[in-house]
Length: 89
Image 1 (cartoon, one colour):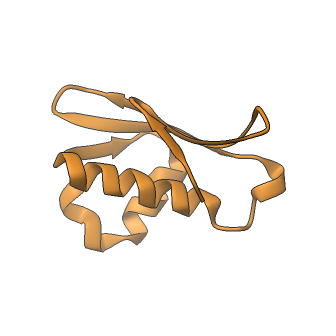
Image 2: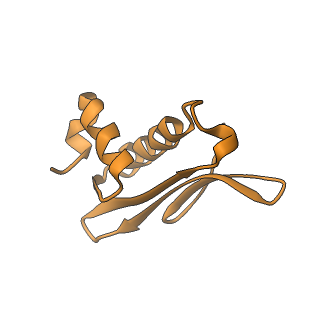
Image 3: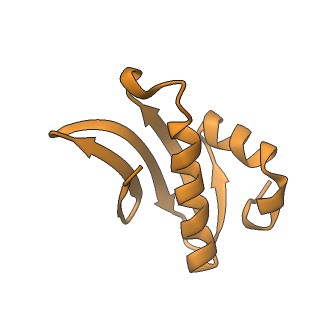
């Protein structure tokens, strides 16, 4: 997937339609993932996991830590223990 990135947002647009999105806020010393969305036409294809992988790459690049108030992001972080150093409990 060719996600677009801007401060606070990673997303996928096609023909002007939002198909997938992850939003996060800058809380000073860390980021907080507060929302993930995948359009019905892409659900079940691993797109949310790809959004999280893109977000994880951002954390690594910026050497930041994260929390999550989004339930999907929390589950993803719990499942991917190899990235625990980037996630605050």
